[in-house]
Length: 452
Image 1 (cartoon, helix red, strand yellow):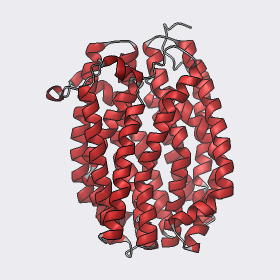
Image 2 (cartoon, helix red, strand yellow):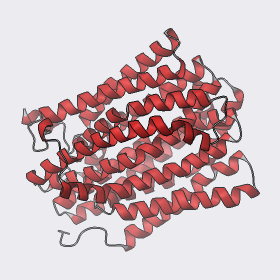
Image 3 (cartoon, one colour):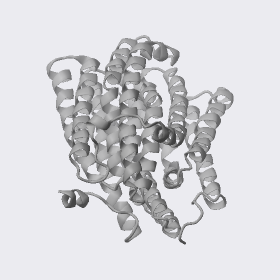
Image 4 (spheres, one colour):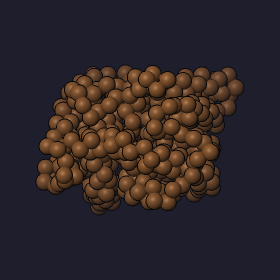
């Protein structure tokens, strides 16, 4: 049994680096692709079978969802860093407590999100300036989505455990299953039962429940040292402190950057439902384009964590260089594909010409700067894997939140247009990448006392 399970794992402390990064990233990529399908299928079904206003309601909820879930996802990132280091160093006792404390935190976080999401959704959507015409659909969709928060966090924490030990395949399999469930239920609830945006929300929650059950089952049934024993799920205070010490900076980074995106969304909302729908539609395309880069980032985090556990400094540096090369090659390919096919893809979401025009305008501004994100993701993943999550947070928050908000509030009013709002993204991508590069070259982020 143990031998079969290890077939799914990529041990990243020895062997050809670029092959290992790709072998680990590909299942992550496909898994992230299916995860992105959750909300994308929602948008396609809503835009084609309900209408543009309903599409705007679903699209305007995404930045808010990312804001609220971001903190808890950061905690799973911190847990993954610790677990990868313990696994690389073969520290069975600490690994045991890290896994069980992580799952306990995800259960507690899920309950908090359910309560907060249901109570605060109307208030925050009002604060965002959501138009009255789409408010009822937005509130209904968001509340139902947050009722599935417990399943969402349990799955992501469990998947983080598997990825930390080098297994990126089984999370993929479970996402494939849940995505199929989501697609089938979307069509059934919306097209056949006429449940509107609420049906889309219910489909997503049920699909998330399926994926969480499958991931917990995998952790319980393994014979490896990261096995989950349900009766032992509890919080070890010392381990919790260490997880939170690494995870909270990542969570703050994700949440605050998401907050800046909520403010960007509020500015987009002022241009009407067509702008909201167009921005939301291209955001889905952008999400798909960024998936491989996010997968490479996760691979860099696990790679760095395991090699720090194994005390292999030179291998970490080689991994950073090879990861950047892989990311840049991908970015060049996807940029060409999107440039020649963006309008055609946008029509999948809506036949409305106004929606398509706003989506296309967004693409023309963002696409030329994707290469900066490719470098940032590898450097950020490597820095996080070394345990320097506070540095990653400061760079991300300083540029993608504070600088972005300065631009939105002090410069955009002098050039009031939808395009001016969109320029907040490439400007802050560039400054973030430059600071990542400076820190990676000048700071001693790889622990001392390691083999060169």
